[in-house]
Image 1 (cartoon, rainbow, N blue to C red):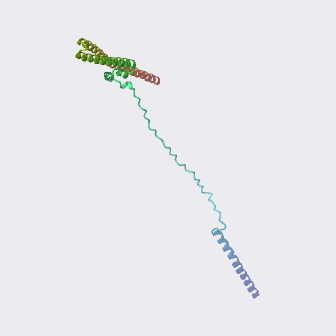
Image 2: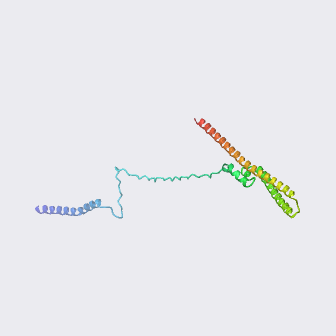
Image 3: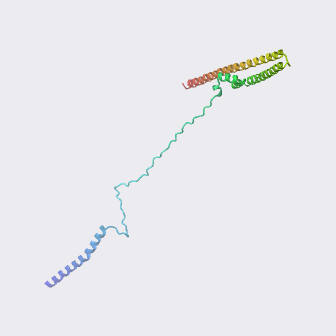
Amino acid sequence: MKLKSYHRTLAVALFATVFFIAYSPVTLLAQIGGTASPSIDEPAAIQEDPEEPVAIEEPVEEPVVIEETVEEPVEEPVIKDPDAEKTPEGALIRSLALPGWGQFYNDESTKGYIFAGAAGALTVTSILLYLDAESTYDDYEDGKASYSDYTKKIDTTNIFVGITAAVWIYNAVDAYMGGVRQRDALADSSNIKLAADMDSAYIVFSRNF
């Protein structure tokens, strides 16, 4: 009876030992497999924490730099009025140097042609008369002409020289007076333009206010 109990106890102990030996590696491997890192062949799925919000990166817009080009003011060429620089004195000096030149300077072409033609003709005539008088005087010295012939011719020459000088002087005075008239006319036109501009400015001012 005791021997059977002993054999039964030994069998249970042996069964328990075999079961423990067989079961313990499986459990250990299962625990090791559950905590081990994923293998290279089978990557583990990365689980996202549902409680933490996923940050979405918005694209950053780069500031647009607008380059402003500053245009330099273009200086308009100043157109000078040629009549504004003309003076009566300038006309006088020109007519004294050459008859008719002052009239052309004053834009009086008709007078310029008249004075230039008259003074030129009188000057040439006076020179020819003087040369003829000198020739007569030479004939007088040679006994070919009388002294009265010489005096008549020289008197005629002096008359033409006087007329030429008078025309020359009158030409210069006329050029000076023409310059004065032109200056006054220019001043009047400037005053009229200024008055017109002031009237226009007054009208615009009145309309605005």
